[in-house]
Amino acid sequence: MSFREKLNPDKLPRHIAIIMDGNGRWAKKQGQVRTFGHQIGVKAVKDVVEGATELGIEYLTLYTFSTENWNRPKSEVDALMELLVDTMHEETPTLIKNNVRLLTIGDIESLPTNCREKLKETIKITASHTQLNLVLALSYSSRWEIIRAVNKLAEKVKKGEINPGEITEAVFNNELCTAGMPDPELLIRTSGEKRISNYLLWQIAYAELYFTDILWPDFTRENLYEAIYDYQQRERRFGVISEQLV
Image (cartoon, rainbow, N blue to C red):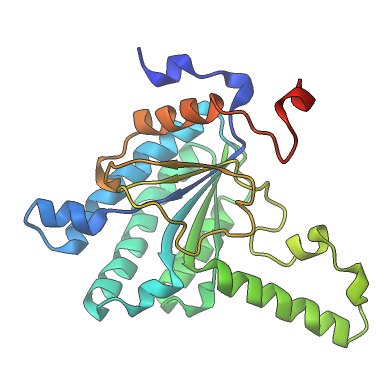
């Protein structure tokens, strides 16, 4: 029986975040260069996006390229940027067909011009779509995002637009890249690593964490369903005790 058949449609997470890890190691196992793993990883992205769309997940956020990834060899970074542009060209018709809306979070202005322009084009084309919000975290890190939000609030205080005592969680949320999005209820990381890697640190305060040894290129929609099934077996208490939930 597929894990999809086991899922309770009334307990699906609204927002799933994924750290897509293991492309390089997968390629090494195949005797290939790291960039080959990233190319095959795109197929896993397509399968997972289709699976999330079919389930009716509202938001799917993928850790695509971190601020720290800029420190990788220039040849790999250039290949990743080229792959991103090529993928946008090839997959935009599929996003349109499946009513998927593309969004991005991160320091998008730091991306090469061709990447930035293609992303903006696809974001504009899919702006009215309603089936799934596909969020790409690009040139993103949570510490960068938090410092950026603090600076924006500090500037507002300096201008007298807000008093320090008026800064609440809701006010802070509105200065984050994810403003207007629900927080992820489920965070998935592939490849066996068990760390968060500077990803959505504020937003995943109460997310359920799911780690799998599967390398990203081998991750399928069935693995996504398995992660969601695991999520549905957990008791989410948010600081209270089980009896209070009942």
